[in-house]
Image 1 (cartoon, rainbow, N blue to C red):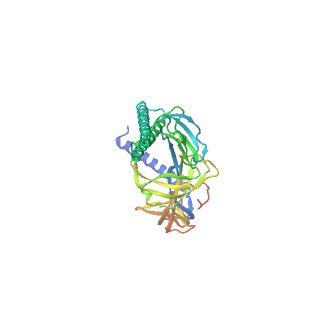
Image 2 (tube, rainbow, N blue to C red; image 1 turned 45 degrees about the vertical axis):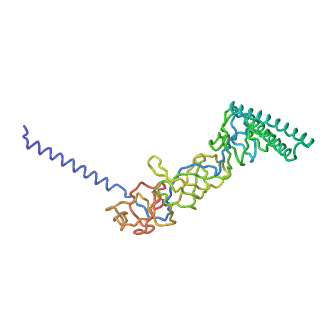
Image 3 (tube, rainbow, N blue to C red; image 1 turned 135 degrees about the vertical axis):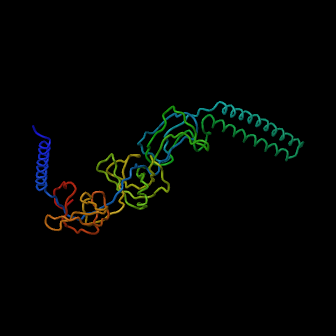
Length: 369
């Protein structure tokens, strides 16, 4: 029988043998592991921000009805190019019963007053012939008749407006909806038979269609408050449209909103940029796009990859090869970074060899990104 001391000694010996085997294996593996190196290189570094938004026409005009009624005809389709003054729809007026009754009653009253004034004027002329009244009384009767005739004409025109939407002989027919600008019809908002409300001081009116000049486009987007202080009017933008893979448009920042908007807890500032017209693709109003804004850039500066940096006491270092196979942590001063490559201001020169800490370069070429 083994005593307790014998069992404990055997266990300890087993543990020592296992630890020695693991140490020898790990040491052998470390010796076999190849140390990957890279070099500091020259690079162009651009710090960009991406703003989401859409491309819109600079001037989009809503055409609205000036009378209330029913849409009788619609003469255009979205996508058609029209000139200012083009007839796009007609409205059939459906008069209100109370308004129609009042207009008819006013016309009847004006007709009675006109007939009475005419009779008074004719009687005054006969009395003047008999030298029973003066010329002044005849002139007064004539004036009363002329005023009564004018009231009758106004009442008749008012009744025509109620019934037809416009008076006869007018240069502008309110029941005919015409475009006020030249451009492309973007939307037709009504169908034949739909009810529309007139545009007046109390009501915006029913939109009939929208027309815009599609040769003058802008980009409307939003930028985060953390970056709004880095942009300014006149900066160049590179605009990409999601619907077209290879389409890139040049833009110029025109305006930045002075007031931010709270969007899901983040403050965003709206901005507007002009967009260069494209001959390669038709840009539709409202199409989604992204604007790449270059906030800062450095040309042909010494740089390394971000993944090859390590930090000692919170300060950036690189493992610089000071002699063959010997790497020494060396403090450096960094500059601009694009998230992948970082500018080196002090501590490393171009071509210096350093330990590659990040993943291997896709090209497999040493020191080139």
